[in-house]
Image (cartoon, rainbow, N blue to C red; front, side):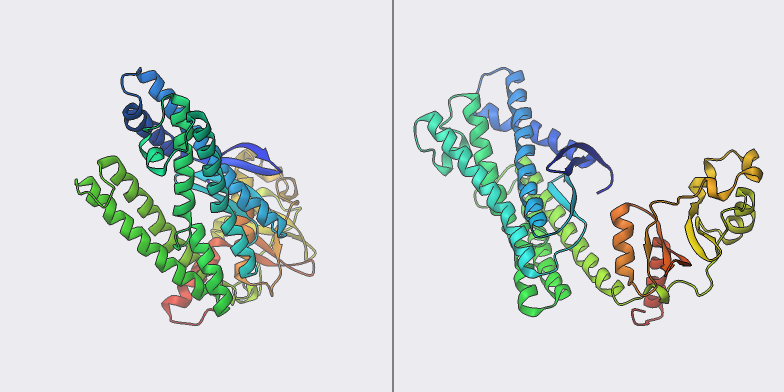
Length: 393
C-alpha cells in the first residue's frame, strides 16, 4: 500500500503504517481520554486520562498487528509470499505477492485472524478477572464498572475491543475476514471466483450501508437498540463507509483481473516496437524518441537483444548541456529488468507492475526485444474495447 511509513520487520515481513493510521490513533486516544476513562474514574487529572488513552491505542495497534501477522504466517505456511503488513485507518492488510489459488487456502487464511483476536480478548479478560478477584461479566467489560484502577480499565477495554474485533470481522461481508470465509465457501461450491466475489461483495456493501444508516441515526440523537451517542454514531458511519467502499473496490478488482486474464500481451503490444541502442546519446533519445512519440520509456536493445530500459526520469538526472555526450547505456536501467512474454496475459502484467511499484514492463521474446507495456496502455485498451462493445481482447 502506498503512502505508508515502514517501521520495522517481524519474521522477515516489513511492518508499516498508512498515513490514515495517524488519524485513527488520534481519534481512538481522544475518544478514550475524553469519554470512556473519565466515566470509569471520575475526578482524576486529565493527564492520566490521556496517558491511559494513548497507551490503550498503542496496545490496540499491537493487537491488530498480531491479527494481521496470523494471516501472513498462515499464508506463508501455504507457500505464499508476504512482502509486508500495512496498518491503516480501520485495521490492516497483509500485502501478498500472490492470491490464494484454492478456496481452502483462503478459508484458513481468513479464519485465523478473528481467532487470534478472540484469543487475545479472552486472555485479557482472564487477566483482568484475576486482577479484580472476580469473573468480570461482559456487561462490566463494556461499562468498566468493575474496575478500580487505571490498569484494570486498560486491560478490560482491550478484552472488550478484541472480542468485538473478532465478532465484527466474522460478519459475512467482503472484504472482512468473514466475507473472505463466505467467498471461499462460495468459490468452492461454484468453482467461480468472480461470482463468489460478487456475492460476497454485495453482502459487504449491504452491511456497510446498514452501518452508515445506523451511524447517521445515532449522530442525530436516535437510540438504536443499545447504541446511542454522537461519537458512537461517527464510528458506525466511518466503519460502514470503509466496508462499503472496500467491498465495491474488491469486487471491481477481481472482475478486472478476470477480464485481463483473457487478454494476451501480444494483442496489445504493437508488432514493430520502437527501441534505441545503448550507444545512442541522450540528445538523440530526447529529440528522436520522447519528443516525437510523447512516451516516457523505451526499451534499450543491441542487435535485437534486450539490454535495458530508459525513462524520462533517467534523462532528468542528466544536465541538459551534457545530453550530447552522454550515452544511453550510462543512464539506463539494466538490472533488475521486469519482463513478460508475448503469450502472458495482462493480469500477469498488472501483478508485476503492482508488486514492484513500476509503470511499465518490457516484453521479452526469447531474449529479443518485443516491446514495452505500461499501465496507460492497458487502461487505453480496456477503454477502447468497452467503448466499442468488443470482447475482452
